[in-house]
Length: 260
Image (cartoon, rainbow, N blue to C red; front, side, top):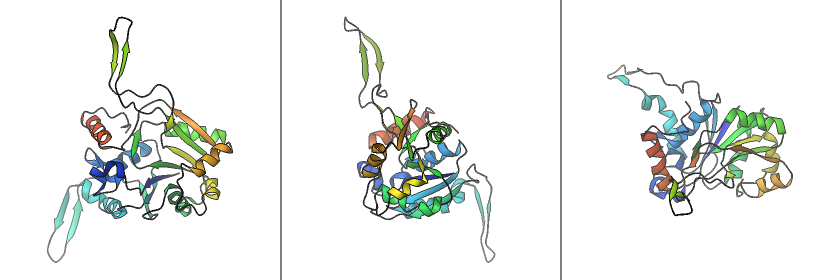
């Protein structure tokens, strides 16, 4: 089953990093966030990826083209009979990565529509963004999607809080202090989708259309959109503050999305 990842946006809210590289290549630790997202799926058995490229997509192509070089110790034989010997193996050797140029300015619905040939023959595919991580139970979401039989399932998450939260008793004593907890009320789209290939009927002439607007609103109005509730960890990388937070969690060995 294919995992389609949207990698073409410009990430303007994280311009400190994305001025020089595409947002999915912004690192957490020593690997791009795109790698972390792919590892989330691969850890649950889904290793066939289709990447929708756009802004600075050549950098993503270069990363995977040189993946063995970047992850291995290498011996080079110089001279008139050059040779290369790689000394390491890596856990990603059974991954399949299809890199598709979906246009520089194409919006999300158009990017999905442009990879339809790469999921042909399948009845469904996974879809996610290249800028958010979580410990989502992908297999359970797929099972939920197949049970209800609608065109799309989204992961409904509780957004991280922007500020700290205090529990205060009647005399002003602080009984609990949580630094930026997840919000306890309300849910938003967490970006981990399961999608029926029937959706392509709704995506014709969609290069200038956001998937999250007219197409998904139409699905909702027709009863074709379902929500899979996720109460675990979820965190996007939309700002430099969130970039710093994710890197701090990784460096401290406290990354809940690391399920591999």
